[in-house]
Amino acid sequence: MFHVKQLEYRVQAPCELLQFLMEQMPDSSRTKVKELLAHNVCVDGRRVSQFNFPLQPGMAVTIEKAGYKERLKPRDLDIVYEDDHLLVINKHEGLLSYSKKPTDRTVITVLNRYLQLTHQKCNAHIVHRLDRDTSGLMVVSKSKQVSQKFEADWKGLVTDRAYVAVCWGQLEPPEGTIKSWLTDGEFCVLSSPTDNGGKLAITHYRTVKTSRRYSLLELKLETGRRNQIRVHLREEKHPVVHDPMYGYKDDISPIPRLALHAFRLCFTHPVTHRKLRFETPYPTTFMKLMEL
Image (cartoon, rainbow, N blue to C red; front, side, top):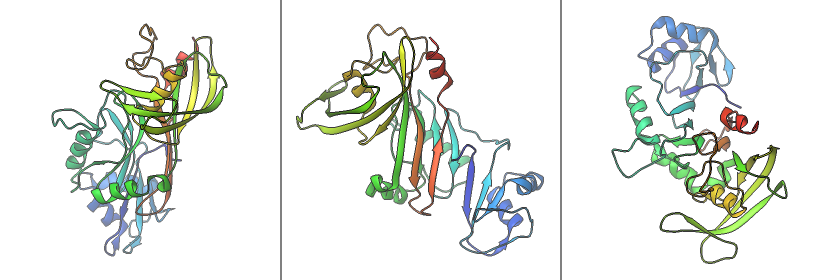
């Protein structure tokens, strides 16, 4: 499980470790790189601090950047993992994943600016999306080829994707599965309990905690349809708190955001084949809601 930012680089030619790190971080001073090397560098999974450690082509050099002041930290998202092929980010609520309008601020525009400022000759490509008002973990590729690998085998590569939500009231039973067919309407997604030609959507939920007014749920998607969790909880008459589209019209919740967050993401790296696991804490605003 990763809780700090990691940068992974693949060695292309024989060289010494300090020289390699200097080449990867041209904007960092030699002193800063040495500080990292003292405690935060691994080669093929083994921590190494030797300046002249000999590197060979194919080796993976990983830099853990916990406690390291980064000069180029993007706004509206946190980069929790990065290597030569992809990034895993924690998107803040209010940021679009993607938009056809070039003037919109999106995950793609934010990351493309970051990649430009860090002198990386690549562009960000969406692998999967989160609603604008949903926060949480997303994987973004640095090439169309990597995106296509995910697209070709999404279910095979992604082993776990879980959300946490706060909904109104208490679901009965406290653990179960919601299943319906979803179709895109003019203004929102429509749901049918029977097959009406729409797309089958399946959501598994588990109640973690209840209070007088709310329930804290963990949810897993068997299918990944647009607005799926929000529509399914509305159909159960327990909508997500502060949902302007699918929630109660008189929702007077004390938080100014949709109470939905993608907190866990596990997948097999499509290039290195490493099994990666990422998890964030539940948002503090969600936990405060459960005290009411």
